[in-house]
Length: 217
Image 1 (tube, rainbow, N blue to C red):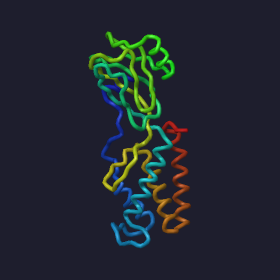
Image 2 (image 1 turned 90 degrees about the vertical axis):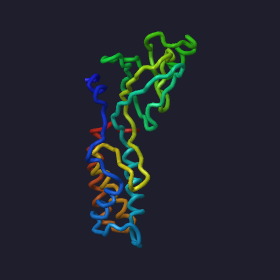
Image 3 (image 1 turned 180 degrees about the horizontal axis):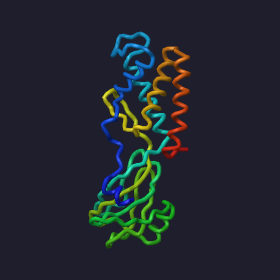
Image 4 (image 1 turned 90 degrees about the horizontal axis):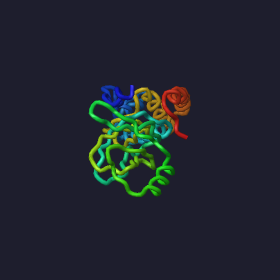
């Protein structure tokens, strides 16, 4: 199964991905309001964008999304960034032609201890172990050539900033984003019954997606 993942890396990209703007249309529709770019004293697209951005950030901070990425090593470089939103690494493999071989994943403390004891050593054909620190992967011995390292990991959901941005959270989280953004919007315009209604819908979605994805403490 791991080899299949590496041949066809996990990705959540699809034709169902929505932009912040598309979520904005849904928020206005849920609140029975005209979708305005500007000119609304009560609520306009700037307000909607803020609610959606806040919803995406809040949900993304609660879950870990499964991902796979490939890293190309370089000569005499020990550390490699995996993902700025990295939460946890499940496995690391070095790709050799059509096959992949696992690299032992140890704690960063054990990695440092071994590194201090053994000193600087460069790759002579394989890697003894690796460790994660922050958002980066550390390899030992230190790479001395170009290899392809595949990392299977979990990461927080990405943030968004503009109406044109695509929300890259898994599609199963789309209702949660819509409901939470709508609840926030309803609170701004003092539609408190709607705010409560959509917050309850979101709470149900949150219980659902916590079963699907790894929660972040």
